Image 1 (spheres, rainbow, N blue to C red):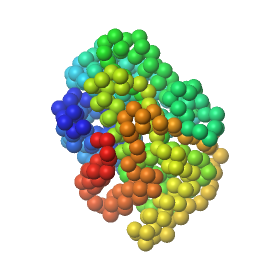
Image 2 (cartoon, rainbow, N blue to C red):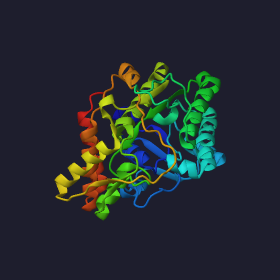
Image 3 (cartoon, rainbow, N blue to C red):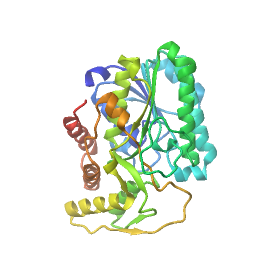
Length: 355
């Protein structure tokens, strides 16, 4: 995979975010020519600055809603690969700012597709979410062929982003041989996520401050996975469809059923491993804040990526949480996080059978 990405011109939107920072680190290791387009990092601290990625890529700070600026970036960098990850990604924030959420997630996708339509792009991946589906509360995982209709403004805006991508693909991209896919990932965890209203960052902040972890919905079930799992699947999709248009499509990039766990199970594993390696006594408490509606049960059916790409998870949920805890402990102890993150990527690659 490293030979494929070496010297490729890649435009990555959302590069300053949590997933974007990990993906940027991988692409830099592969020798790609990366241009990142994003707003400034939204948290303090943030992973992008901790990894000192500004010195490794061409970083452009800009708003995905600014079509003219995007067109300039496309003209200047001439990417052959585009990975679209820029978004307003938080459910609870979307209730507070629905207009901004739709402007960013819907019109941002339109702007990217408009630029691609007039470009020399060969492989395009739009990263969405498991929440694009109409959640009926069923026990089985949602497959790629089920109805898209997210409930809240965030989820619904990402459903719209999917539909927009499909329309541009059918209307323009196919005739220009621009191979296009969308990827719907589950809830990702990993070192360096400091965002608000996410359970693992809440755990991290509690550890830093030596406080109890507060859980809003302990019985909610989500398809948790380490951030490197979907990122390497994204890169696999991009590479395969670049080489063969038959791989273009839409994919669930989620964990196996046994890794779809409750929030309280996740936090139990987190506390157990953190307390084991630090001799602390972090624990959690249940404290609902009567916030807006969030789905209590959600799973993805990942059979398609297994059939098409021979994929299977590399780190199960227990390993994923432990790797997150270990990264967090290294950060608290002021280790070199650029080196530590690079070593975790190397460890994952050694275990991964399909890279």
